[in-house]
Image (cartoon, rainbow, N blue to C red; front, side, top):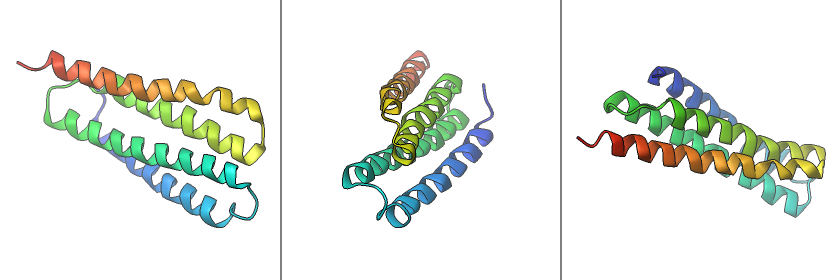
Length: 125
């Protein structure tokens, strides 16, 4: 099982990066990107922040309960990198095919939450 303290540290860094990305979008990009691309940037920031908070929650669950958190935390981290990362890159580069990888990150998010549920159900006794 990964050390929950490491996941907490990673989550904290990711949350700081989400705030920075949100501020960057609101200030530096607002006169550069189209309204549609700004909305895409905001979506990336929201999913980034929510799932970084989710990582924090998973770490706390792992430290309090006998629930394996390696897969759920890894999947959420992969989701942030792939989902939000591809959207950030799409907005900054304009390379349209990057949007095609975004759903893979979404699947990683969904899988991470499902795996956490399965791990919790396995430890009901």
